[in-house]
Image (cartoon, rainbow, N blue to C red; front, side, top):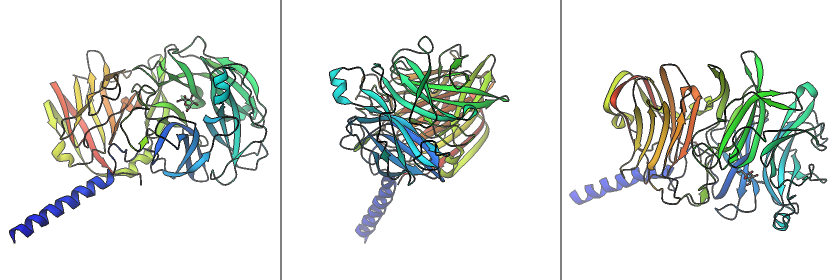
Length: 500
Ligand code: FRU
């Protein structure tokens, strides 16, 4: 009898642990960040909202989990949170691999493919010419879809922009410029941006260039974006330029410029190099098209420093959470802020709140959190009085530390003891970010998935995204402060998985 009941208990324990493992069928698989089921992914491409659906295309190599001949993979979502992988949208052809680009809804049928056609504008990268070193192996092409992105037809007269002899000539981002009723295309051209315009998405005129002597130049310029944001009653134009390497914490990162755009020329009034995200894992981030007044950014949650080596199987890479952009002025400078889209709330489950709690040495929240999965959102406010850290940990002794250094007025994420780090020499490091806010209150939002943490400090004025690979879920959480802080407000929410 005793034997039977022990066996019964063991079986029950097994069933409940498989229930947890169920959500974690594969080690390190993100549970609410988009990942392809298998194989290699990099940049998000052609993100567009159309007929009630968000489309995400992405750089995809379906035959291996390392970078290879690029296709456009495809996923769709009703909310930017739960994504469903779809069949591949664009395959390489005689003009080359399908590199990064954008998609627009052609509401006025300017291209003649059909009213409301989805038109993709992308780079053709010809590996044959690349070997021959013609310097002209990257050109811009278009394709259209009349069935909501399911099937695509490439334009017969591709490419639509020939290469004038610039080795890195890619990643077109197109938007409609209403005042002059024309399309504007922003292109990364080696160490600067070149703008083109077109009445019909087919014939393009070179307008101007920007940036040879501005911003960061520690690497090649890639994946740009250009859009206005209303701020204090007027339109401020934001030019995003991704750069690799040369990021603030090494490797790939996104910088941005604020200024003016008149349909021809972009003029920047940024005095310093500004970064979208100070973590190491938000690259090729650009915004969705056709989202009205909302500017929603999503990036590739990896870094070219180690993207091909991360220890995941059978896929590589995830995307960041979608983020809503806005502008905020602090003193004489204006900054882009980003916070998780409100749709993320659909993942909220149980949780708890605390008010006015003193943290001296350590406040262990593990028992209160009752969260075996390590998927959570933490919203937390304290006064800027002392150093503190938020420590995610697991049974295996791995630790991921998110903190604030008062003397340096910096935020940081330290992943040096976060689990598997040996696949790349520089992976296990501490990353730092300046604090721009001057208010005495420090509000923080932390979004944690199985293998990533996204920090939105000061309502998105300083953002850090880092991936990590813990041996088991980060089920423990504590707040630490040697000299002590007061937690004014804290809200902890367990998030549920959104991926199938
Ligand atoms: C950026 C990038 C783009 C290019 C694509 C190739 O990560 O290098 O410039 O179009 O990836 O996959």
